[in-house]
Image 1 (cartoon, each protein chain N blue to C red):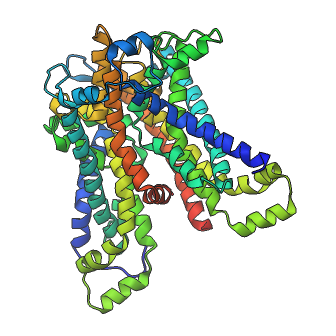
Image 2 (image 1 turned 45 degrees about the horizontal axis):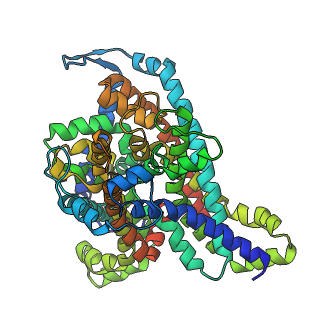
Length: 293
Length: 280
């Protein structure tokens, strides 16, 4: 907080009013509702509800379906995070190195950031379509007959590729600004001490990039959890059936399609707990970064 | 150029190819007629139906009720993008100003109430949020579309960080000159924050434009559809059609891509600055 501040009996409250009102109505209230209804079994026809304690949670956690979705979410998150971070880091390191055309590369690599996830999903659907998709034709040359929307593995593959494609620009921007933030004197000192570029990268550059990398790890996990909703919704074409979905998508399915309010709420609460842990980690990281800089 | 530099460029070109090709193919396919696409698959060369397809998508009413055309969706996307970005900037600047520059009881409580929202993405509280907006009669309205999205604290957090970095001396000097809180805000803090406001505006515009889940739930009335929301409708029409209108679907996708991409490319440096600063 600032050392010098204004003092006014009512002005700060007036200033905070709009934000607090919206937060209360559209955040705190729904969150409280979610927690509350996670303990109730709602009548599907709207005739009241029964308190069932932790039944919704135990039902959710023991159901085989939830386990399957949770496993898929784990695998999906791992691949999306790992691949998009890896590819973006490689591209950022190269873009940082080249002198000629650096800014053109930067523009060409980052604009996909502005493509909406469902639009990315639609493009994915087009390219992976059994009938018209060139990617399907390409893999058919190697004897892999892809069936998006029918085959569980193939659909997951298309989802991961699309999600990675969409996420590379963000990671690229952060890695590149991280790299450009490393001082020239450090780089020069390193290049005198160590001639191998590869070793220099792993012993000097990479550790200096670690805070950015760790921050991006959290961002990417959050992305894979929540922001891929649009991609998944478009790729499964509204017909989840046997298709792979993530935990967030299941909350939506059970709540809006299945009308299982209690179950959906219990899942929401479980997700909130996960987000809470992630955010706490992120906050601690922010504190650290602020201290360092 | 030596070998190493060539390999650097090759890797970058491969990356550019991977990022650009999908959208390029989408665009090329959108310039053909539906039968060609259906028969021959995704197109690698431009066709002759560019004007025809885009005119049809923009001005011919589609959907189930035949009430909405691409132009209306474009307008709605603009309203959502601008409304969201402007609303968010105003609300969060005011809140951040109160938190950073005022000493008042319950300041810490207010701070934490607002920041708790960072813990709850819209997706996890989607069902109760929908019910509340419905009970307030805000379904199928622009305010129902925009206001609940503004609630998260990302903007407030960003402006708080920025205000904290503004030197204390400025406020002291302003107070010696007899400036009140409002004058200080209007004449010193806002002009000082100009580039930050621009940066955050660009990010928020893109974020608002690209919203999908919330518009999908909150707008069932087709005249309120945004382009990104319209994607879902395209797919439903497409699945039912005899010969799927891939070309038109792709044209609509291109329309949904162009405005945010232009914003990001034109205001690149502000965009990057805002993104890197705000997420710290």
